[in-house]
Structure formats: structure tokens, C-alpha cells
Image (cartoon, rainbow, N blue to C red; front, side, top):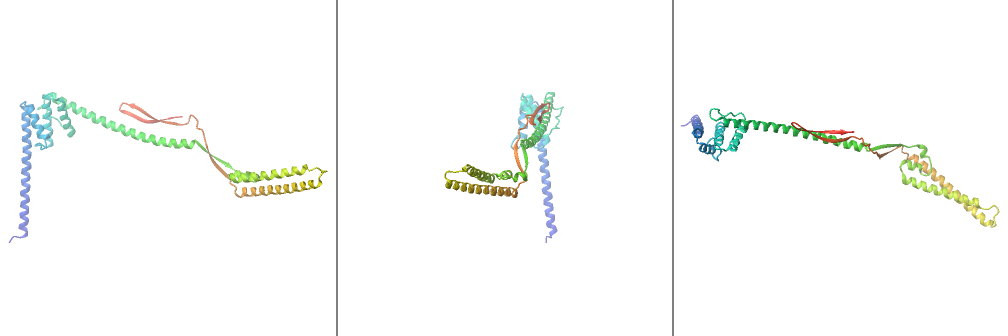
Length: 303
């Protein structure tokens, strides 16, 4: 009879075997990578630069590379670059230097393995990449500063436009009078801003006054000793009635207009008027000044 503890021991033993096998496989693969690298290094040491270049390129850049350890890959690339230098392919060598330094900026080639010419070119590549990185960082900072300055300028320009709109108009306050509201001919209505009603009162009151004046004039033109007494009496009676009706209408309209104007009295009225800005009004303009590190973006104000 097999108990539960026996089954557990079997599983643990199987796991240990699997771990040991994996360790052996990893160790064997690591040893294989070292072996592959040493083959390429030996080809380089023997002066077989074409063979060393081809062998190590396939080992690190093929679809199924045989060298994947980052340290060994960097050393292999250095050998490839040195072989390219020997073969007159300086541009290809610089490409390898750049790949090495971009992956590991602190990489240092073995001064005992590589000649001074290769080491010097490697150093130049390192300095160039460092300068490019510095310039890029400075350029990014300048771009950020320019963007921030541009944003500030746009905000200030918006405030300036708002100020200009505000300054180009003025609010005029007109204070109204009860005395004016108590005048006839629709003057009170005009003061209150009721133009239509003011026109009605003005026109009707002027018509009534004019009619009364004409009737009075006709009455005054009737002779004291008329030839036709009957006609004269008729004209006198008609002119008197017309004058009385017209005068009464005027007074009624005038009193009604005054009462209405005081009931609808508006103490103040407001009006916006355009105002011409002086030529010396503030003008805001962008400013771009070249500097040693790039450029400075800002704004200027002209009064």
C-alpha cells in the first residue's frame, strides 16, 4: 500500500530531477556561448579578419544566434568592429561601436587586444555620442522653454485683446430729471427711452396746438362790421368751438403725457460708445532671440 506521503516524495524527487536537468542545460549553453566566442576571437587573433567578421556576425545577429549573453555580445561586436577596421570598412566599424555604446555606455574595450587605431576610433565614437546626447538634451530643454514661453505669450495676448476690447468702448451714464419728465410734447417719454410713445404725444400735441392756433387766427380775422352778419356769426362760432376743442385736447394730452412719463420714470440710462484708442496704446509682440545654446522666446510691449 502506497500512502500519501510516498506520492509527495515522488513528486518532489521529479521536481528536483527537472531542476538539475535545467541547470545542466543552462551550464552547457553558457559553455557553448563561451566556446563560440573563443572561436571567433581566435580567428581574429590569427589575423583571419574576414572569417572572424563573418563568424561572429552570424553568432550574434542571425535569426538563431549562438551568442546571446550581453557581455559576450558586446565583446564579439568589438571584434567585428576591429575586423571591419582592418578590412577598410570604417563606417561598418563605427556602426558596431554605436550599438555597443548605446546598449552599454560604460563599456571599455580590452586595450591589450585591440590596436591604438581601433581604440582611438572607439573613443571618438563615445565622445560623439555623448555630445549628441548632450545637444539633444539641451535642444529638448530649449524646446520646452520655447513651448512654455509661447503658452505664456498666448495667454498674455488673450488678456491684451480683452483689454483692448474693453478700452475701445465706454459706458456712458445719463441721469434723468423729473423736471424734464414734467414737460409736454413727449419730452418725458423721449427721456425714458420710449421713443414711439414720445412721437405719438409730440405729434398729437403739436397737431392740437396748431389747430387751436389756426382757429384762433380765423376768429381774429372776422371783421367787426361784416357785410354778411349770418356768415360772420357762423365762422365765429365754428372757430371758437374748434379752438376750444383743440386747446382742451392739447391740455389733456399734455397732462396725460406728463403723468405717464412720471409713472414710467427711469432714473438713469446706460449707453456704450466707441472710443478711439490713442496711437501709443500698448502693443504686444513676440520676440525670438538666438543664443549660444539655442534661442530665447519672449514678448515685448510697446507703448
